[in-house]
Image (tube, rainbow, N blue to C red; front, side, top):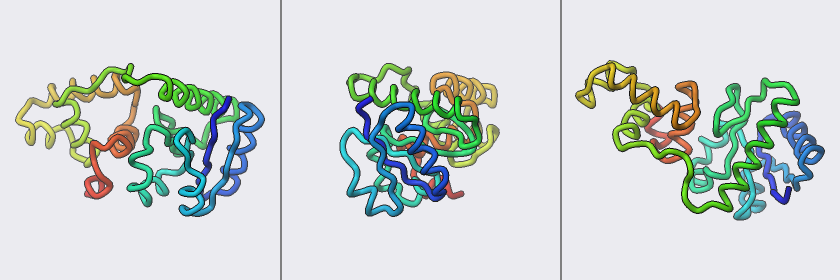
Length: 183
């Protein structure tokens, strides 16, 4: 593959391991960065950036416009993250999927995934802010069953199965800001 990868992680062993996997399995050019200025210097239009959730949040202004090229290393795998707790084969599959997604994103102009409705975007934002179903229902003046239906539809459309995954997705895609999540 012709992808350039920037690995920006706190854990040096994780960074070295990812660098080795990406080189061995995909032949990618990998740049390991230790500070934000190195990431800024290495960044180019087609580079995928692999980082932690903490680093993403700490440099949100930098990562937000690049969110389609960011992969988060976390404890739970989702559409926008890779779990560090998986075995090597699973991590290689997830990395391959992330590289393919990036390749397709560069080639396609319109989005192929189902778009969220305006109300689903509202519900997603409130979920990411930490509100429970009853609070969301009260705020939007809808029934709890309607909130549950919206949640189910959001999770189906996005392929995300956890509230933390939804929160990360909402943050990375501009539905909420870092300050909104701190409640």
